[in-house]
Length: 149
Image (cartoon, rainbow, N blue to C red; front, side, top):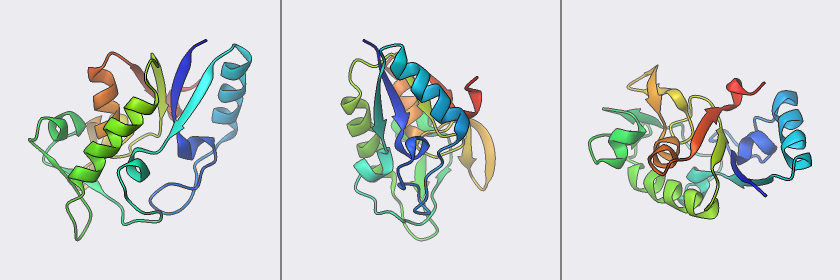
């Protein structure tokens, strides 16, 4: 049985920074098919697992993407606070919850979960969020909800 990490907001949990979820018909259809195939979905919100409240101020990557944050070369900030420690701790906790997963479907452009492009330095830029970068470094195949069939 395969384990698949999924951004909790995509599965209907109201855990996004704005207190909303991002469930869509496409994600729901994919999730149902995955479960029918014998997969186990592991819903995680790295930001909540890092101790951040919901709702919370929006955050963005400053000075680099999630891989740079993990190397200590970039930060995650809101308008008023540096939340880098919470993002890194949450990414580690989320990855540990999904131990053994070989696949992840994550929310596009999120500073935690974005894969391929993220909010960085005030604009959408190429790169990965902190959680996505950590998963990739551990050999997990990561894709965005927007890349689902």
